[in-house]
Length: 393
Image (cartoon, rainbow, N blue to C red; front, top):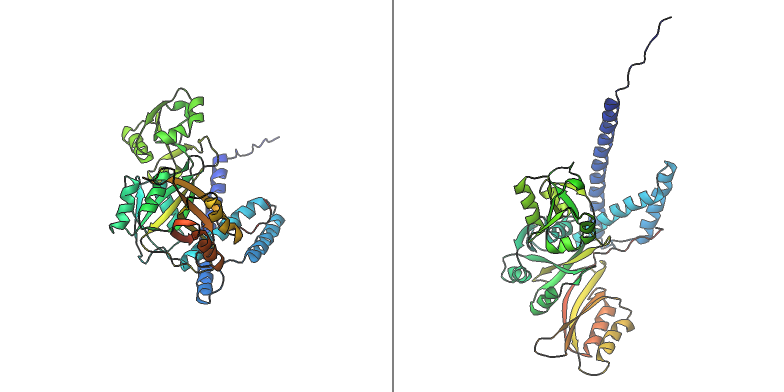
């Protein structure tokens, strides 16, 4: 009797071939997404030339339902496909809106931002322009006043400033600068604040970390993680960018930093743990400022921001705000600030949904102004939160 032995299976070779096939599919996906983007850009240009409304929510809803039905026949999750097409449609719509609302006449505008390369302001700047054909030139500044002055003095064409955070609230200094300057809001961008543990090496373990460096606010927002990992020494830096520079200079895998994934990629560093913030949902809203108002077609969903002070009489604020209720204008933000040298008097900053040139918004602002000592329009700009074709979640 002759005994034969099966050849041993080379598991590593088999895994490598599977990964190669996946890589090829990923490449095809990227090429197809790029081709799809070109076609949706052509659709946007045609709509613009014919003055056709950008959005058709009923068509979007029908499109997504058809994709879900098709995907389910291949055994794919409906929720997974829904999320993918939500992203694709959102990207297409943002690009089409930017065709209608160019942020500036410059092809490469200089944009003032806070901090250094890799800061959240830098990330918001990149995110705001990623759907446009504009190539911004980021210019870093150390303070909010210096950013505003940069636009006023024509050092830059635009500026981007954080104005509110969902966990720490409004950034009051920015509100004061808005009222004092003649700059106008021409856009907004909302980004998630996702603190990560960043290391020199992708194989660093949490148990290996001896020192964690970061901005004081970032470390505070990750206090739950720090409490669990008491063996880690905390070291403060003036910015997340400084923290990343520090671990690069030290060259020690036992020293890690708190920063965002965007910054880690810029500095060619590794994220070893994502989302270590205390709050799972943490967002910052940024505004884009210019000397000139944005020219926005009425087909684009907008926000309008204004600042006012009311008459010093009982119920004056309620009467002023009631003007918006009467004309069915939703208010998304009200922020009060004291008026310098006028004890107990307040300025009220208001964001509302609606185009400044629409009849209902115009009438509401006029009615509101009749109850005010002072009212100033801070800007009308595209709403960054796009309405979705709701199907199910």
